[in-house]
Length: 326
Length: 252
Image 1 (cartoon, rainbow over the protein chains, first blue to last red):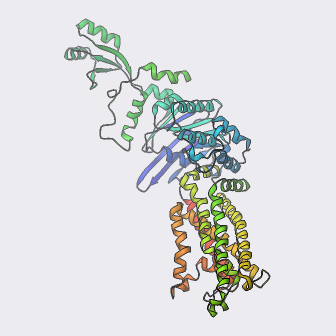
Image 2 (cartoon, each protein chain N blue to C red; image 1 turned 60 degrees about the vertical axis):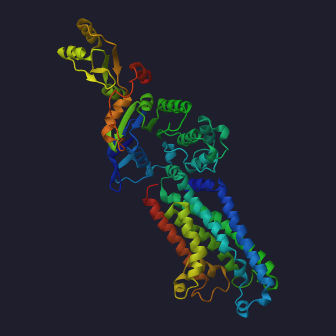
Image 3 (cartoon, helix red, strand yellow; image 1 turned 180 degrees about the vertical axis):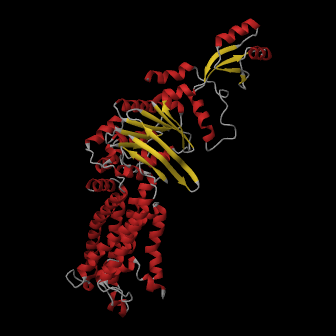
């Protein structure tokens, strides 16, 4: 079990990580989500004792990482692709790692086969593509057959095939009872892989809950209406105590609206409707809304305009992925 | 400790730069020493009398180290800084978070490998140089000669250690080389030629090293080979200790 307790990292007068506390549940995939610059990588580096916290602590089964004996057998980590000497072959890179933790040499061949790099094992890693570098990093993380795995943005720069491969790998690792901790800045990616979610923004904890709960809490449902007679529609709705908001794209939205009732009312009052549809805001939006105040590098336009800029995906499309898992 | 040592040894032997820099160290040191000895032998009669009186056949055969040490510095600097420039240091510390153990393993790997290369370099330089000096040669059995030859190997090993220490302080290859190379190649020789300043510059590691690997030594320098050894040792250990203290405290 990994416990992060009041972890803080200060660079000059800038707080990168701000009294962050959470516990990573065992045997599941935990998504570590936050916008770029939220402090995800800094937190992970402190978990591995690479960076020294300003205050606070990380405990892995009660121990600091630096106190672990042969830590590769305990935690495997992929922090960045290509943390490899370009002149060394993939095989030799894994060989020195294995030697340092007394991992048998045959395990090197095993993990190379597992990530599909056997054919290029004796090639120097300088010529590897980003995807191959990422696979080598994952092979290094798996080398010691660890109970806990940490991946920092593992799908960055991967092609669609590679993304699916990483996704399935993480799920199968968790299915084997391992704890998987994976960071991402993409909610959509996490929705497909994670069972538990930890969201941070500007170094602070924003959410720490099971994925299902996050979806229930944060997915906004509404009814979208389009009409050539907006005044009549609005009069009709307000007379019936229903509030509609303009979405900026010529349509109207009724939060948690009862679609049948609105349709009946429109028929009754002879209001022509061009659209009457149920909508669900995507998790991406929920995530953006949550982190809106905590985004470090704001663009000129307001970060959040719910449901207006993008066509929200139909509920079935985003729900299908995680529902299969639960 | 042994697994970490083995791991560092695998790292060193699986990159080309190790072979290139160490081979260059040997070839340049031996080659330049041989050229100097050959020239000295052929121009002996035209040398000034003072030169001939102070002639040190052993030290002359080691003249090549002035240039050869640059390749040795590159080897030692790269062993440390390549970890930082490639980002590999995070993989290394992930595998071996005990920083003292890691640094000791690196230091021992350098001492072992450079020690062997240095002994080879010292003995080949000596015997080739003496062969070329002809009638002005000295013998390995003459007083002080064995000490000087081993002194050469020790100097080279300690120089590599000093470079490792500086590399741990600076972390990036270019700044580390920009400090070490001019120091040994330019600054120390220049300061040692300036009156007054040279009283201080006499205690620089390259000057102390020359006392260690010469039979007669420089009469201007106020100490002998034993003190020379301890001065070089102090420089090397000083750099390694400071390098470790910074390494232990800093974010990787």
